[in-house]
Length: 208
Image (tube, rainbow, N blue to C red; front, side, top):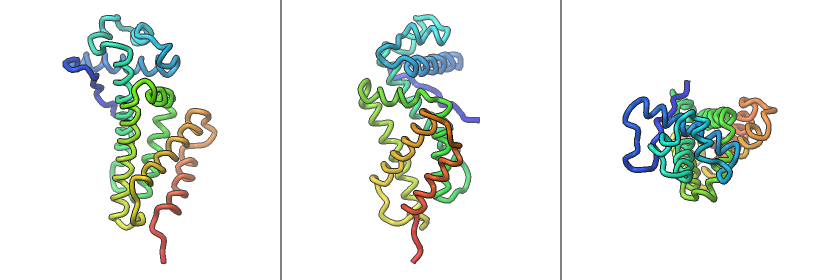
């Protein structure tokens, strides 16, 4: 079972101090994801979020000052959740290639369960460019660290760097768009097998 990270709102002094507060904040963020995912940032509303959450308007302002602020918190929250599902999928000993395959499978599973992530992240490019950039930069950094470890173990070839990490992330993002958002006409296993075959020929150390 995937652990959901404790959400932290961006406003100083508004962090929940009780378990009830954390549950309320979680409910607000989940409702914001549904509201923004369905209507987009500009048509979404705070009242729409609180209506979905079943909370009073005043409860919203206990944690957030505006629609912009809850959107920023949501982008960061979804990025954290993607990171966490990937980390949980990578528990135990794995080869470098199996690690990339498991990380992609975890992301695809999350995207199928939370299709709104694509619309929210895409809109962040214009609503909150800093969060948008941070989402992709931190994801690429995690991939880059895995590539480094794969190179040190001798499974991946030498010389893999930042550009390789971004290329792999780009492949993963568009596989998710095609097979999780637009359609689910292929299994996650089939998708990860195709991706693994590309990586095996492209970044693994070749004999000879």
